[in-house]
Image 1: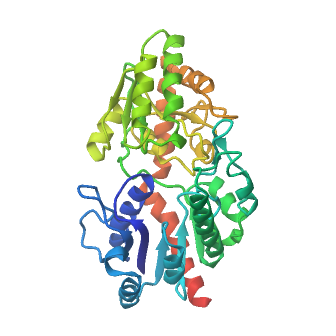
Image 2 (image 1 turned 135 degrees about the vertical axis):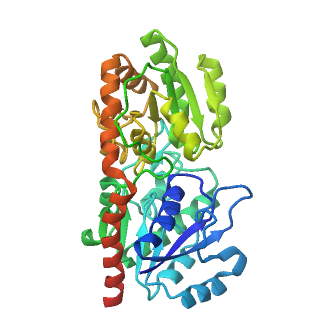
Image 3 (image 1 turned 90 degrees about the vertical axis):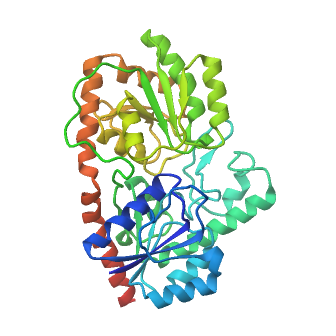
Length: 400
Protein backbone atom coordinates (compact mmCIF):
# COMPACT_ATOMS: atom_id res chain seq x y z
CA UNK A 1 0.00 0.00 0.00
CA UNK A 2 1.14 3.54 -0.77
CA UNK A 3 0.60 5.72 2.32
CA UNK A 4 0.97 9.49 2.32
CA UNK A 5 1.61 10.91 5.81
CA UNK A 6 0.42 14.49 6.36
CA UNK A 7 1.69 16.52 9.31
CA UNK A 8 1.82 20.22 10.07
CA UNK A 9 5.60 20.35 10.38
CA UNK A 10 8.68 18.20 9.88
CA UNK A 11 10.30 18.58 13.31
CA UNK A 12 10.10 16.01 16.09
CA UNK A 13 8.96 17.96 19.17
CA UNK A 14 7.03 15.39 21.18
CA UNK A 15 5.41 11.98 21.34
CA UNK A 16 3.11 12.53 18.34
CA UNK A 17 6.00 13.33 16.03
CA UNK A 18 8.15 10.52 17.45
CA UNK A 19 5.28 8.20 16.56
CA UNK A 20 5.08 9.46 12.97
CA UNK A 21 8.84 8.99 12.66
CA UNK A 22 8.49 5.42 13.94
CA UNK A 23 5.83 4.62 11.33
CA UNK A 24 7.77 6.20 8.49
CA UNK A 25 10.68 3.93 9.32
CA UNK A 26 8.72 0.77 10.20
CA UNK A 27 6.14 0.47 7.43
CA UNK A 28 8.48 0.14 4.40
CA UNK A 29 10.04 -3.12 5.68
CA UNK A 30 6.49 -4.47 5.96
CA UNK A 31 5.88 -3.88 2.25
CA UNK A 32 4.39 -0.36 2.24
CA UNK A 33 5.62 2.68 0.34
CA UNK A 34 5.51 5.92 2.36
CA UNK A 35 5.75 9.63 1.57
CA UNK A 36 5.51 12.74 3.71
CA UNK A 37 3.67 16.03 3.20
CA UNK A 38 4.33 18.71 5.80
CA UNK A 39 3.17 22.30 6.01
CA UNK A 40 6.39 23.74 7.49
CA UNK A 41 10.07 22.84 7.35
CA UNK A 42 11.98 21.69 10.44
CA UNK A 43 13.92 24.20 12.49
CA UNK A 44 17.67 24.17 12.03
CA UNK A 45 19.26 21.36 14.05
CA UNK A 46 15.91 19.80 14.97
CA UNK A 47 15.39 16.04 14.53
CA UNK A 48 13.03 15.35 11.63
CA UNK A 49 10.07 13.06 11.00
CA UNK A 50 11.84 11.33 8.12
CA UNK A 51 15.11 11.08 10.03
CA UNK A 52 17.15 11.73 6.90
CA UNK A 53 15.80 8.61 5.19
CA UNK A 54 15.07 8.55 1.48
CA UNK A 55 11.35 9.30 1.83
CA UNK A 56 9.55 11.32 -0.86
CA UNK A 57 8.42 14.51 0.84
CA UNK A 58 6.92 17.86 -0.02
CA UNK A 59 6.77 21.05 2.03
CA UNK A 60 3.59 23.07 1.46
CA UNK A 61 5.05 26.38 2.64
CA UNK A 62 7.89 26.02 0.12
CA UNK A 63 5.88 24.71 -2.85
CA UNK A 64 2.47 26.25 -2.30
CA UNK A 65 -0.72 24.24 -1.76
CA UNK A 66 -1.51 23.74 -5.45
CA UNK A 67 1.96 22.52 -6.36
CA UNK A 68 2.10 20.25 -3.33
CA UNK A 69 -1.30 18.80 -4.25
CA UNK A 70 0.01 18.18 -7.76
CA UNK A 71 2.97 16.26 -6.31
CA UNK A 72 0.60 14.16 -4.21
CA UNK A 73 -1.58 13.34 -7.20
CA UNK A 74 1.49 12.26 -9.17
CA UNK A 75 2.61 9.98 -6.33
CA UNK A 76 -0.87 8.32 -6.32
CA UNK A 77 -1.32 7.33 -2.65
CA UNK A 78 -3.68 4.50 -1.75
CA UNK A 79 -4.31 6.21 1.59
CA UNK A 80 -3.81 9.68 3.04
CA UNK A 81 -2.88 9.32 6.73
CA UNK A 82 -3.36 12.66 8.48
CA UNK A 83 -1.69 13.34 11.83
CA UNK A 84 -2.80 16.94 12.23
CA UNK A 85 -2.66 19.92 9.88
CA UNK A 86 -2.82 23.61 10.68
CA UNK A 87 -4.90 24.37 7.58
CA UNK A 88 -8.39 22.81 7.37
CA UNK A 89 -8.50 23.87 3.71
CA UNK A 90 -5.40 21.79 2.96
CA UNK A 91 -6.84 18.89 4.95
CA UNK A 92 -10.07 19.01 2.95
CA UNK A 93 -8.10 19.15 -0.32
CA UNK A 94 -5.98 16.12 0.62
CA UNK A 95 -8.84 13.84 1.63
CA UNK A 96 -11.23 14.90 -1.13
CA UNK A 97 -11.95 11.88 -3.33
CA UNK A 98 -9.17 9.87 -1.64
CA UNK A 99 -9.25 7.10 0.96
CA UNK A 100 -8.09 8.63 4.23
CA UNK A 101 -7.44 7.98 7.90
CA UNK A 102 -6.89 10.40 10.77
CA UNK A 103 -4.81 9.77 13.88
CA UNK A 104 -6.05 12.17 16.56
CA UNK A 105 -3.07 13.00 18.76
CA UNK A 106 -5.15 15.60 20.59
CA UNK A 107 -8.59 17.21 20.76
CA UNK A 108 -8.65 17.82 17.03
CA UNK A 109 -12.03 19.25 16.07
CA UNK A 110 -13.48 18.61 19.54
CA UNK A 111 -12.41 21.73 21.49
CA UNK A 112 -12.32 25.41 20.57
CA UNK A 113 -8.73 25.79 21.78
CA UNK A 114 -7.55 22.18 21.54
CA UNK A 115 -6.56 22.22 25.23
CA UNK A 116 -9.79 20.69 26.61
CA UNK A 117 -9.32 22.30 29.99
CA UNK A 118 -10.47 25.20 32.13
CA UNK A 119 -7.89 27.46 33.78
CA UNK A 120 -10.23 29.25 36.23
CA UNK A 121 -10.82 29.04 39.12
CA UNK A 122 -8.28 26.20 38.91
CA UNK A 123 -6.88 24.27 35.98
CA UNK A 124 -8.95 21.15 35.41
CA UNK A 125 -10.12 18.99 32.49
CA UNK A 126 -13.21 20.01 30.51
CA UNK A 127 -15.77 17.37 29.56
CA UNK A 128 -18.05 19.57 27.43
CA UNK A 129 -19.09 18.62 23.92
CA UNK A 130 -17.65 21.07 21.39
CA UNK A 131 -20.08 23.63 20.00
CA UNK A 132 -21.04 27.29 19.82
CA UNK A 133 -21.82 27.34 23.55
CA UNK A 134 -18.09 26.97 24.18
CA UNK A 135 -17.65 30.60 23.12
CA UNK A 136 -19.82 31.75 26.02
CA UNK A 137 -17.55 30.17 28.66
CA UNK A 138 -14.22 30.95 26.97
CA UNK A 139 -13.55 34.01 29.15
CA UNK A 140 -15.32 33.02 32.40
CA UNK A 141 -13.45 29.70 32.53
CA UNK A 142 -10.24 30.97 30.87
CA UNK A 143 -10.24 28.30 28.17
CA UNK A 144 -7.62 30.23 26.22
CA UNK A 145 -6.08 33.66 25.79
CA UNK A 146 -7.75 37.05 26.11
CA UNK A 147 -7.70 38.09 22.45
CA UNK A 148 -11.19 37.93 20.88
CA UNK A 149 -9.63 37.65 17.42
CA UNK A 150 -7.55 34.63 18.46
CA UNK A 151 -10.55 33.04 20.17
CA UNK A 152 -12.67 33.30 17.01
CA UNK A 153 -9.85 32.19 14.71
CA UNK A 154 -9.14 29.11 16.81
CA UNK A 155 -12.83 28.26 17.17
CA UNK A 156 -13.47 28.50 13.44
CA UNK A 157 -10.44 26.31 12.67
CA UNK A 158 -11.62 23.66 15.11
CA UNK A 159 -15.17 23.88 13.74
CA UNK A 160 -13.86 23.21 10.22
CA UNK A 161 -11.82 20.28 11.51
CA UNK A 162 -14.91 18.96 13.29
CA UNK A 163 -16.84 19.05 10.03
CA UNK A 164 -14.17 16.89 8.37
CA UNK A 165 -14.15 14.14 11.02
CA UNK A 166 -16.98 12.16 9.44
CA UNK A 167 -15.27 12.12 6.03
CA UNK A 168 -12.45 9.83 7.15
CA UNK A 169 -12.56 6.11 6.50
CA UNK A 170 -10.99 5.61 9.93
CA UNK A 171 -10.34 7.82 12.94
CA UNK A 172 -7.61 6.27 15.08
CA UNK A 173 -6.87 7.17 18.69
CA UNK A 174 -4.22 6.11 21.18
CA UNK A 175 -6.71 5.50 24.00
CA UNK A 176 -10.27 4.38 24.61
CA UNK A 177 -10.82 7.76 26.25
CA UNK A 178 -10.11 9.51 22.93
CA UNK A 179 -12.10 6.96 20.94
CA UNK A 180 -15.13 7.77 23.10
CA UNK A 181 -14.47 11.48 22.53
CA UNK A 182 -14.50 11.00 18.75
CA UNK A 183 -17.71 8.97 18.79
CA UNK A 184 -19.30 11.59 21.04
CA UNK A 185 -18.46 14.15 18.34
CA UNK A 186 -20.06 12.34 15.44
CA UNK A 187 -17.58 9.72 14.24
CA UNK A 188 -19.37 6.42 13.52
CA UNK A 189 -18.43 3.83 16.15
CA UNK A 190 -17.38 1.39 13.42
CA UNK A 191 -14.88 3.89 12.06
CA UNK A 192 -13.36 4.87 15.42
CA UNK A 193 -10.46 2.68 16.54
CA UNK A 194 -8.35 2.72 19.70
CA UNK A 195 -4.81 1.51 18.92
CA UNK A 196 -2.57 2.33 21.92
CA UNK A 197 0.77 3.83 20.96
CA UNK A 198 4.03 1.93 21.44
CA UNK A 199 7.32 3.11 22.89
CA UNK A 200 8.84 5.34 20.22
CA UNK A 201 11.82 7.14 21.71
CA UNK A 202 13.19 4.42 24.02
CA UNK A 203 13.58 0.73 23.15
CA UNK A 204 12.08 -1.52 25.87
CA UNK A 205 14.43 -3.72 27.88
CA UNK A 206 14.26 -7.43 27.10
CA UNK A 207 14.43 -8.42 30.78
CA UNK A 208 12.52 -7.34 33.88
CA UNK A 209 14.32 -4.74 35.99
CA UNK A 210 16.64 -6.08 38.67
CA UNK A 211 16.37 -4.71 42.18
CA UNK A 212 18.58 -1.68 42.86
CA UNK A 213 18.95 1.04 45.51
CA UNK A 214 16.66 4.05 45.21
CA UNK A 215 18.10 7.15 43.57
CA UNK A 216 15.47 9.63 44.73
CA UNK A 217 15.16 10.97 41.19
CA UNK A 218 11.83 11.79 39.54
CA UNK A 219 11.81 12.50 35.79
CA UNK A 220 9.59 14.97 33.93
CA UNK A 221 9.78 14.53 30.17
CA UNK A 222 8.34 16.47 27.23
CA UNK A 223 6.96 19.90 26.45
CA UNK A 224 7.11 22.34 29.34
CA UNK A 225 3.70 24.03 29.13
CA UNK A 226 1.17 24.79 31.89
CA UNK A 227 -1.12 21.90 30.91
CA UNK A 228 1.68 19.40 31.60
CA UNK A 229 1.66 20.32 35.29
CA UNK A 230 5.33 20.92 36.06
CA UNK A 231 4.23 23.73 38.39
CA UNK A 232 2.32 21.14 40.43
CA UNK A 233 5.09 18.55 40.44
CA UNK A 234 7.75 20.73 42.07
CA UNK A 235 5.80 21.53 45.28
CA UNK A 236 4.53 17.94 45.33
CA UNK A 237 8.15 16.73 45.37
CA UNK A 238 8.96 19.09 48.25
CA UNK A 239 6.02 17.74 50.25
CA UNK A 240 6.86 14.13 49.41
CA UNK A 241 10.50 14.66 50.43
CA UNK A 242 9.37 15.93 53.83
CA UNK A 243 6.99 12.99 54.28
CA UNK A 244 9.64 10.44 53.29
CA UNK A 245 12.37 12.08 55.32
CA UNK A 246 14.82 12.08 52.42
CA UNK A 247 15.48 14.39 49.49
CA UNK A 248 13.99 13.83 46.06
CA UNK A 249 15.49 15.41 42.96
CA UNK A 250 13.93 16.36 39.65
CA UNK A 251 15.23 15.63 36.16
CA UNK A 252 13.57 17.74 33.46
CA UNK A 253 14.17 16.51 29.90
CA UNK A 254 12.33 18.84 27.55
CA UNK A 255 11.81 22.46 26.67
CA UNK A 256 9.04 25.02 26.66
CA UNK A 257 7.77 28.31 28.08
CA UNK A 258 7.33 26.85 31.59
CA UNK A 259 11.02 26.08 32.06
CA UNK A 260 11.80 29.33 33.91
CA UNK A 261 8.76 28.96 36.16
CA UNK A 262 9.65 25.36 37.06
CA UNK A 263 13.25 26.37 37.80
CA UNK A 264 12.12 29.26 40.01
CA UNK A 265 9.72 27.00 41.92
CA UNK A 266 12.47 24.43 42.44
CA UNK A 267 14.78 27.06 43.92
CA UNK A 268 12.02 28.43 46.15
CA UNK A 269 10.98 24.99 47.43
CA UNK A 270 14.50 23.59 47.82
CA UNK A 271 14.13 20.91 45.14
CA UNK A 272 17.33 19.98 43.32
CA UNK A 273 16.39 20.23 39.63
CA UNK A 274 18.48 19.33 36.59
CA UNK A 275 17.45 20.57 33.14
CA UNK A 276 18.89 18.64 30.20
CA UNK A 277 16.82 19.95 27.29
CA UNK A 278 15.46 17.44 24.78
CA UNK A 279 16.99 13.97 24.98
CA UNK A 280 16.65 11.07 22.58
CA UNK A 281 17.75 7.48 22.15
CA UNK A 282 20.49 6.17 24.42
CA UNK A 283 20.83 9.45 26.31
CA UNK A 284 17.13 9.46 27.21
CA UNK A 285 17.17 5.76 28.14
CA UNK A 286 20.21 6.26 30.37
CA UNK A 287 18.61 9.13 32.28
CA UNK A 288 15.32 7.26 32.62
CA UNK A 289 16.98 4.14 34.04
CA UNK A 290 18.53 6.31 36.75
CA UNK A 291 15.09 7.54 37.86
CA UNK A 292 12.83 6.01 40.49
CA UNK A 293 9.69 7.47 38.91
CA UNK A 294 8.50 9.27 35.82
CA UNK A 295 5.89 11.96 36.45
CA UNK A 296 2.77 12.55 34.35
CA UNK A 297 1.28 15.51 36.28
CA UNK A 298 -0.90 16.71 33.40
CA UNK A 299 -3.73 19.03 34.44
CA UNK A 300 -5.51 18.61 31.11
CA UNK A 301 -7.09 15.33 29.91
CA UNK A 302 -3.97 13.83 28.37
CA UNK A 303 -5.03 11.91 25.22
CA UNK A 304 -2.73 9.01 26.16
CA UNK A 305 0.58 9.84 27.82
CA UNK A 306 3.22 7.96 25.86
CA UNK A 307 5.90 8.81 28.43
CA UNK A 308 4.46 6.24 30.84
CA UNK A 309 4.76 3.35 28.40
CA UNK A 310 8.29 4.35 27.38
CA UNK A 311 9.45 4.68 30.98
CA UNK A 312 7.79 1.40 31.89
CA UNK A 313 9.76 -0.35 29.17
CA UNK A 314 12.97 0.35 31.09
CA UNK A 315 11.46 -0.50 34.46
CA UNK A 316 10.41 2.96 35.66
CA UNK A 317 6.89 3.28 37.15
CA UNK A 318 4.84 6.47 37.00
CA UNK A 319 2.87 8.87 39.13
CA UNK A 320 0.24 11.16 37.69
CA UNK A 321 -3.31 12.44 37.77
CA UNK A 322 -6.38 10.44 36.77
CA UNK A 323 -7.12 12.49 33.66
CA UNK A 324 -7.84 11.55 30.03
CA UNK A 325 -6.15 8.37 28.86
CA UNK A 326 -3.60 8.19 31.68
CA UNK A 327 -5.56 5.69 33.83
CA UNK A 328 -5.53 3.25 30.90
CA UNK A 329 -1.81 2.61 31.48
CA UNK A 330 -1.16 4.06 34.97
CA UNK A 331 -2.73 1.34 37.09
CA UNK A 332 -2.51 2.02 40.83
CA UNK A 333 -0.37 -0.51 42.64
CA UNK A 334 0.67 -2.15 39.36
CA UNK A 335 2.45 0.31 37.03
CA UNK A 336 2.63 3.26 39.43
CA UNK A 337 0.40 5.33 41.67
CA UNK A 338 -2.48 7.56 40.59
CA UNK A 339 -3.67 10.83 42.13
CA UNK A 340 -7.28 12.11 41.96
CA UNK A 341 -7.81 15.18 39.78
CA UNK A 342 -10.75 17.21 41.05
CA UNK A 343 -8.91 19.47 40.47
CA UNK A 344 -5.29 18.35 39.93
CA UNK A 345 -3.38 19.58 42.98
CA UNK A 346 0.02 19.18 44.60
CA UNK A 347 -1.23 17.45 47.75
CA UNK A 348 -2.75 14.34 46.12
CA UNK A 349 0.25 14.13 43.78
CA UNK A 350 2.65 14.21 46.74
CA UNK A 351 0.65 11.42 48.38
CA UNK A 352 0.97 9.30 45.20
CA UNK A 353 4.75 9.85 45.15
CA UNK A 354 4.99 8.77 48.79
CA UNK A 355 2.92 5.63 48.15
CA UNK A 356 5.22 4.69 45.27
CA UNK A 357 8.50 5.27 47.11
CA UNK A 358 7.95 4.65 50.83
CA UNK A 359 8.37 0.85 50.72
CA UNK A 360 11.32 -0.44 48.64
CA UNK A 361 9.59 -3.79 48.05
CA UNK A 362 6.46 -2.06 46.74
CA UNK A 363 8.56 0.19 44.50
CA UNK A 364 10.27 -2.86 43.02
CA UNK A 365 6.86 -4.43 42.35
CA UNK A 366 5.83 -1.26 40.52
CA UNK A 367 9.03 -1.35 38.45
CA UNK A 368 8.33 -4.93 37.40
CA UNK A 369 4.64 -4.22 36.75
CA UNK A 370 5.42 -1.21 34.57
CA UNK A 371 7.90 -3.29 32.58
CA UNK A 372 5.39 -6.12 32.05
CA UNK A 373 2.70 -3.70 30.86
CA UNK A 374 5.10 -2.11 28.37
CA UNK A 375 5.82 -5.49 26.76
CA UNK A 376 2.28 -5.44 25.34
CA UNK A 377 2.95 -2.09 23.66
CA UNK A 378 5.94 -2.83 21.46
CA UNK A 379 6.16 -1.32 17.96
CA UNK A 380 5.65 -4.71 16.30
CA UNK A 381 2.45 -5.40 18.23
CA UNK A 382 1.22 -1.90 17.47
CA UNK A 383 1.87 -2.27 13.75
CA UNK A 384 0.05 -5.59 13.76
CA UNK A 385 -3.04 -3.84 15.15
CA UNK A 386 -2.71 -0.69 13.02
CA UNK A 387 -2.23 -2.23 9.57
CA UNK A 388 -5.69 -3.86 9.31
CA UNK A 389 -7.30 -0.52 10.23
CA UNK A 390 -5.38 1.31 7.49
CA UNK A 391 -6.15 -1.38 4.92
CA UNK A 392 -9.85 -1.26 5.72
CA UNK A 393 -9.82 2.56 5.55
CA UNK A 394 -8.28 2.36 2.08
CA UNK A 395 -10.89 -0.18 0.98
CA UNK A 396 -13.74 1.85 2.46
CA UNK A 397 -12.58 4.86 0.47
CA UNK A 398 -12.49 2.86 -2.75
CA UNK A 399 -15.97 1.46 -2.15
CA UNK A 400 -17.23 4.95 -1.36
